[in-house]
Each structure stands twice: as C-alpha cells, then as structure tokens.
Length: 318
Image (cartoon, rainbow, N blue to C red):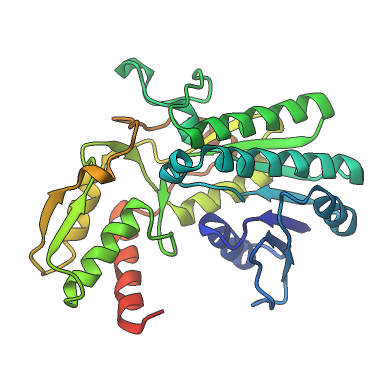
C-alpha cells in the first residue's frame, strides 16, 4: 500500500507518519514545500512540492499513483487567518482543488482522507445544539473556518460529482508533543519551562481562560485517521473528538500542578481572539460506531508530555 500524505512534516502529519510506520507495512510519501533532503526510514520517501503548483501535483500523481491520500497540508492557525484571510483561503482551498484535479487527470482512484476542522461549526446559539454533530448547520466565524467550510464542501462535491473515494474528518482541538509553540498548550508549557530555569520572570500572560474546548491528544487523532482510512464510508463526514469540553483554565491548572515554581497569572487583552467561541465540543458516536475508535490518552498525560518536551528543549537548546 502506497500512502501519500500532504503536510507530513506538520504536527498531525508527523504523528500519523510515526503511527503508520509502527502499525502498518505501508510505504509513505510525504509532500511538503520544506521536505527533508533525506529520509529517516526506508519506507518513507519525500517529495518537495508547493501544492500551489498544479502541474507539479499532476506530475506527482501520474508518477506515484498512490493507493491512499491524506490531505493535511494547509494554514491551520486561526489568529494568522485574521492577519491574512486570503492567504489562508488560498492555502486551504486551492491546494485541495489542484489535488483533486490531478487525481482525475492521472485516472487513479485512491482512498482520500480530507482533514477539515471543528471550526466550521462556529459557536452554539443555545445549549441544545451541543455537542456538535455532523448534521449541524455550518456557521463559521473566522477566516480559517470559512476556508475549511469550502474544503469540506469541495471534498463532498468531488465524491458526488466525480465518484472519488473521499472521506472527511472534522477534528476538534488536538495537542501533544511537537506542536508549534504558537498554539495555546505548548505556549503555556514553554512559558512554565522557561520560568523554571529563570529564563523568564515568574509571570504568565494569558488570554480568554473561560473558553471551553474539546481536546484530544494528537496521537489519538492519528489513530482516528488510520481507522477512517481502513473503515470510513466514502462520502461521509466524521467528527474526531473526545466529546468532553475543558476550559483553557483547566489546562493551565494541570500544568501548574506539575511545577514547584510559584507563577503569577495576568490577563493580556492582546491574546484574545477577534471573535471567540465560548464553548465547543463534539459528538464522536459516528466514528466510534463506524471504526471502533475512541481516545485513549488522558489530558493529564498529554499536558505532562508537552511540558517535559519543552523542559528538554530549553535544557538542550533543541
């Protein structure tokens, strides 16, 4: 089995790559603009390619003819989408369109897993709308979410209009080791680790701590993607989530319980989103029924693993 993963060097892509190498005998091809020059494993190959290059994608598909495609590449940071809405839309929509067109041009029929986002659901209007189910009306409230609505709709359109074997995963918030420090949990962990060794004053500046999100460990998210590749139904959408809302404050509390250092907390208005969602969590019954998947790693372990990673980074400089 040949599996092509766009954005395999990203956060979720790295976790998926590690899982597939350990759990399957599949051959992996990672596609990224900044792909490594050398592979770290004999079953991993890399293609350095900008997914905005339509002809390049066509050549890649005609040459590689993958059995499975997982489309993870894109701009995934909500605050960045406010600063560059068009760049976000272009990154998240054009690359997927070129990918589908290249598949059709190569006359291949791979299984395609498209990754969108829970952000497409927006904010609940009342408590009865929660947890969000796949049937909920989409109501994006930021530019990133709009781009993912378009990607979600496009995936289903190509399944219906061209009979592509497409499945859509709608992951809710996920975190874990190797996540970019721009995101909230690794940002907190980095600050704690820097404070512990005296590289930062014992003060953390935080944003909206009352917001509640549905967090899943990225290693469980990777397991969900594998389960959907193996058992998902073409043309269907699946929430990938824990089903449990957790406040950002509770995440910080877990971190603070893991350090002996006294740390002061201050609210920083600059860290608030332009538009925020007070609470968002999903119903994962559809993916559980289709594949048997459910999260296994508790949030306490995830938070501890992230903090220990940042302690190591700060201690070693890498």
